[in-house]
Length: 124
Image (tube, rainbow, N blue to C red; front, side, top):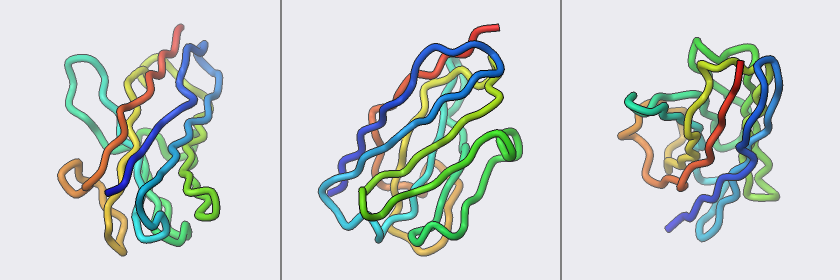
């Protein structure tokens, strides 16, 4: 059983940056594909970015590719999401997720473990 705890959310002005972290415990971190999803009020949870177990295959939603970077440190059991050039449309609760799979996955239902989320609010 993997436990995931996100941190790093907050309030930022448009054009600013945030770095989210997700610390994992209770499992073999390097066995999991890791991902970030987000959910804005009244909207469905959507895929943001994912990274393979080794960290060499990041994959992004079209809406964030470029400004956002996902990375992982298997020695620290942590996955990160660097978010640059933020805009108000990025406002959402951001969730970390883990899937015990070799290949990167993008579907909500394909992930087995979820964190509680961290709120990101971008003001104009």
